[in-house]
Length: 144
Image (tube, rainbow, N blue to C red; front, top):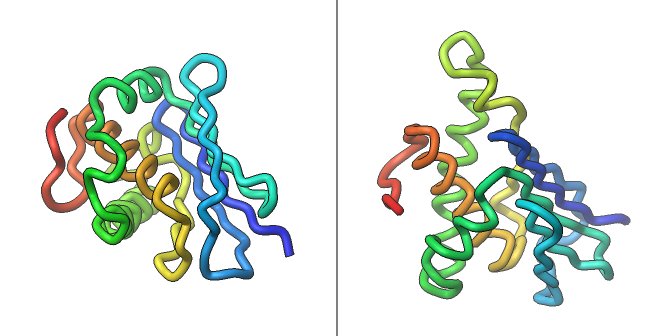
């Protein structure tokens, strides 16, 4: 079965969809920066790809985010689970929260091990999004 993970963030829009038959993804992930503000993570063997497209994020993650392995994968997963849950809640309340900021739900399954790189980029996008848009999804948000 084809495993896929897509993250598309277009001007504050995030979509993570997965159709996974395995509980983990091996560490054969390639991170490739493509043109403009697009960050691509791909595992061609498992046919999954993550795309992050948001003006400024590529530069921000390179210059401002804490380095890889600063946080443990379990920490990143925990924060991502809380932030994604709150994000999805806001998507479902367009009269209360701007539908221009929260356009689509994120299907982040805490039972799937997406690997360090995917969790690192989701975490950092959430930090970037919250700081850039003066939003607070849940708990402490690092200021950077």
